[in-house]
Length: 125
Image (cartoon, rainbow, N blue to C red):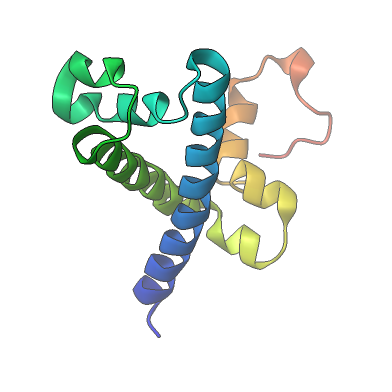
């Protein structure tokens, strides 16, 4: 299997898990805030249907299905970015590297932005 096939497979797996988690979280928050688990999912579809989507509280193909699809595409896109930056660290079971993107990734970038007093003493980025 080529590296691109592995990357695509890992991205889809990570994206599916993250999509399920974000959809569940958004539904719970929507229930707590508005009393509707669907209203917050419908709000994602504002990209296609403008502000009218944010006022929809019932499940529908027009708003809910489009909201779910747009959320899945967005989350899977970010999952691809994660896999490109952190995928090797995750393969090696390097939790810190997987969370921070390893030394050349996000962790290194963030550490350079910190003031000297906030940097860990052993930071060698």
